[in-house]
Amino acid sequence: MSQISKVFLIEDDVVTTFLIKTLMEKLSFASEIFTYPNGAEALTALQSSEQLPELLFLDLNMPIMDGWQFLDTIQTITPISQIPIYILTSSIDPSDKSKSLSFPNVKGYLVKPLGAKDLHQIQTSRF
Image (cartoon, rainbow, N blue to C red; front, top):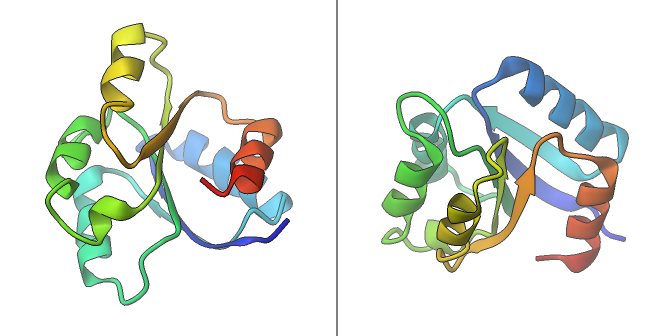
């Protein structure tokens, strides 16, 4: 199983961010893991990045720019709109899942907490 080169984790909760990043590091999930507390900061980083991430994890409920606004914004920005995204949320609302999967680059909907099994499945499927 090959390691993912670069991952963006867009999550506003510092404890959740710490736990997910630690799990990813422990499992050697990605060579580089970058974290952002909202969609606006992640978008700025994406637009100025020389090498785009291979994968994004996106929370839906965040301040400044939430996950929905982020998804809407990137749809017209190539090649950012091509990056595979996994929604990572506490929402169990079926309408949120359905809405998220209507975006072509959303590859999955994961309800927190993220586990080793989730990361293994993502890594083996190679989105």
